[in-house]
Length: 255
Image (tube, rainbow, N blue to C red; front, top):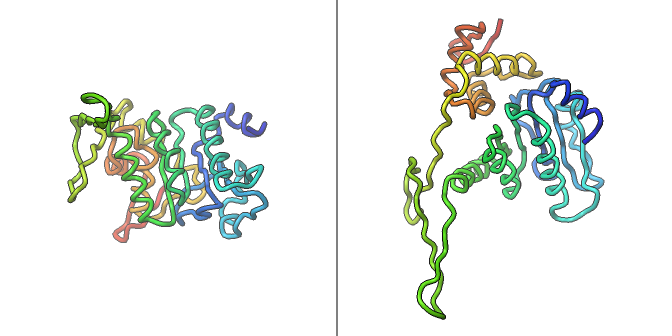
């Protein structure tokens, strides 16, 4: 990791991490909150150029860096991206959220592992249908217990896997598909006012904070998913204690 990063991490100036698989999905949502405290890493294959549209969005951020794979290969950039995700996860406090931008289904494993160890992590892609599939796959993998295998009888008999379902809520069942279990939401470990104040500090440092109600609720959900409060409750606390208001057209304004 660069020396500048080490200084930044010690100073506590990072409020979020954004990792972009530019070789695969070089896009960002128009309302994605970026600030001078957003640590951005963009990953490319060797000798690839950063797309101009993406460059305009992130070029002025002080904690932004472009990283090219040292050599070619089908998954070279993926390996580099996974390694940096692990380094940053090990270096940064657990309350700092990670966002992964990719259209590579295999890289959704980064998000799944970060979530498994308690990090707030979200996956975004410019292909919403694939994002929905990846998130559904993440829920099934994280909540389904591993099958245990036992050998029956003598030689020539096959193995069978017995899956013991967890006693949690199941998704609606479709034809031929077993329902996946959904983990129960975490119990709040901090007060609603404390969580809301933390989110407000992130929002105040954002270069392009959400300006519409739907985008704001999505951002609240992504950044506070591990605190155990619904986005609506945090939104109401923002209105009550932090001067946030929303007009009849859904436009967000802050004092």
